[in-house]
Image (cartoon, rainbow over all chains, first blue to last red; front, side, top):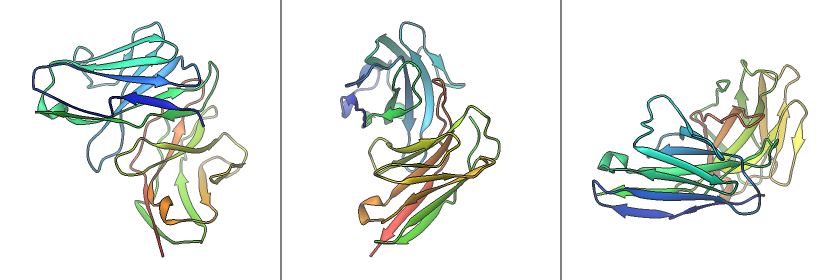
Length: 116
Length: 110
């Protein structure tokens, strides 16, 4: 299947700093990407939908100024957690929709964020 | 996205078929049925998806009822490596988002 890659796989940062997570579709173009977060023993929670060249659409309760999403190209979306706090520590996962009219969505390997 | 209902857990003997049910009674006409699985601390792995017809690939088969209100994922010969949380999602189609439910924890045992 298609490959979606995230970087970094894990990151530790200090409280108050910002951290960027990249999501790349390696062998296909993705006009739409999605960002999720997952806490231990819980399901994935959709944070936002990212469309190439336009502003992201955030789910209710997700702070857009805290979780900055940029989808500058058809193969790259980034999530920046600004002014991180320990409660932002989580597993962040991106996914990408294959093809302009496709309906298969592939997920990245996830990125573990620990804020200390 | 339509809400889905799955049993929280299931057990299966290695080598036997694992049949995972999913109810999606409020699915709309343009929504697909997707199945993903997640092994601890990894991103979800795509398994299969379908709209109306039954589908089969190298990993599994997807049986969708005629009224599309429920479906079954079939792993024909389960192995220990199939132990994971399996998510059934009704949604997508035209770039629409996928909303995850709580999934089914499948445990494959010797």
